[in-house]
Structures are given as C-alpha cells and as structure tokens.
Amino acid sequence: MCHTEDPPAANLETILEEEPLSRFLPQFTLYEAMNAAPYHVRTYCMPTQCLDPLWSMLRPVPLSPFLPTYEADTFFCAPGLLTTVSSDENEAVVTLCRATAGP
Image 1 (cartoon, rainbow, N blue to C red):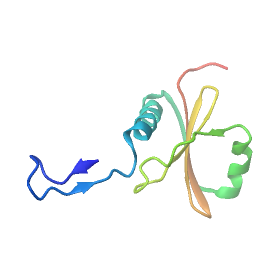
Image 2: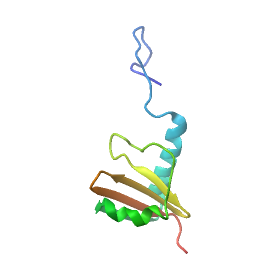
Image 3: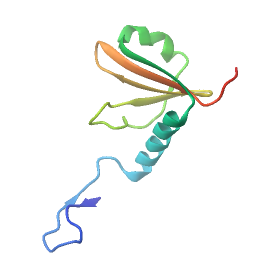
Image 4: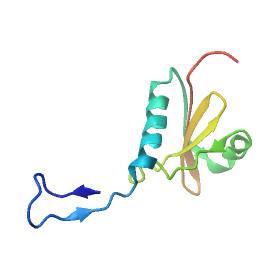
C-alpha cells in the first residue's frame, strides 16, 4: 500500500500496490543477480519460434513479469543459469546470465 501524500493529510488517498512486497523482493533479487553476473548473452529481435529449444532446458520462475510496464520480463532458470524473456507474438528479447565460469 502506498499513500499519495507525505506527511499524511486529512484527505489521504490510499493506493494498493500492484505487486506485493513478498513477490517483488525475489524478482528484484533475481534481476540484480543477473545484473551482477560476469557473463551475459543477449539476443534482440529473435523470432519466437526459435525459443522452442530453450524451453526444454529452462524452468519458469513462478512470479509475475518483472517491470510489467516497461519490458514485462519473465524469469527462467536452469542449474547455474538465469534467463529473462520478454516477447510478443513475433519477436523475443532473451538475456542469459551465468555467475561462474566452468562446466
């Protein structure tokens, strides 16, 4: 919940948050872990049919899209790998991050 005035006034309007804090914090943690990862791979304007091989190795993270008004990134993971996918019917933007070098 957030308030429209600080300090609170008599005609204070209360606005419910779109994403509860209990879901926002894991999203933010995953997003920042991806930003801090030393190894990144990004694709831009990738046809969505090319995503099919990725779905066999990635598992969706059961959270709503992060930054829904901006990119609507959906998180996916695999052992040692974090991924975000932002797509429409035709194109996708995919970011893959790995935190460590090795097999």
